[in-house]
Length: 79
Image 1 (spheres, helix red, strand yellow):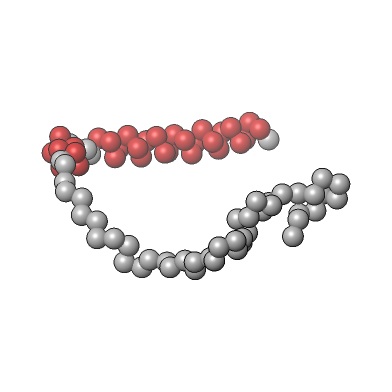
Image 2 (cartoon, one colour):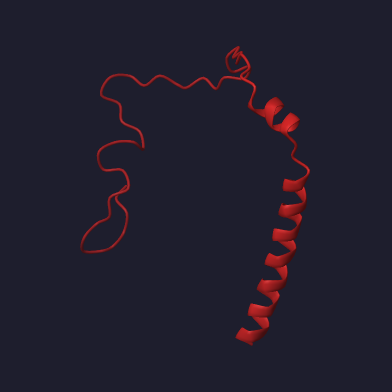
């Protein structure tokens, strides 16, 4: 069984490497130059921002100091 799995893995990896090598051969100096040419990055902000609810002072949500802690004796999560 492990021999069969190894044979399958080898076949798949050989196909992958062959395809990678074929794609690599297609890359010319011109393609590399175009890819590596610095371009100005323009960021116009997030078009769909998610607004968060503001919490009042002293209010703790799930992020409170006991969040995710486990009771030692019972193994149950604190509520």
